[in-house]
Image (cartoon, rainbow, N blue to C red; front, side):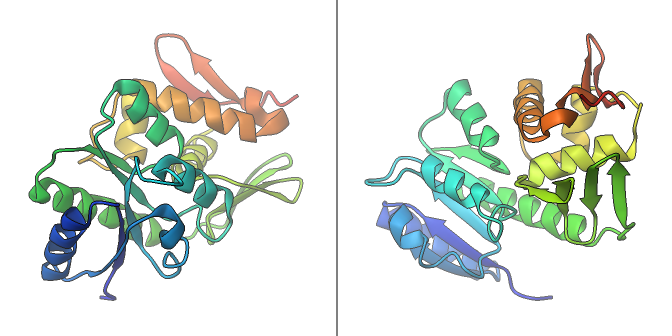
Length: 230
């Protein structure tokens, strides 16, 4: 199996050294960047980012936002490593498309377990059988390259947003509870709240333009995709 490349982005050099040592010992390729600006020069070819939030200059949140806006990097998995541990901070991280959020101080074993879980999810998703396009009127999903478009115009979706849309569109009319969506879209080892689903659905609706109304909330039950475009 191809060796996965992980980029650690943190201004704490001692912490980077510890993570690099353990990642390499586990068989990963690992490099460090000590600022978001430096990371922009090293991201190409990475399979996962371990990203600190509070750094001099550009913050980790801002870097994540930029990456999720770019076609080449929007599907790149991100695990935030940060001392910002309020619920709002965590939800902001997930709203930016993070795959996991680990608060400092943390154990290296915990980080390694999260890395393995996120990479395993990425491998599993990429290995799913390709079933061609899913389509509803002008909204289309290409399962082969994991992209979505409206009337032929690409939509900039994060991995989580894409997985949510794919699941709901491929099961039109079926209501999924928030817990079912968490179990289906988020890695099992990631601890997130049901409110995280609401945050991602809200963000996805904003990107679906006239198809936003198709993502219907069933009070007390969950979400479904219905044919109610505007």
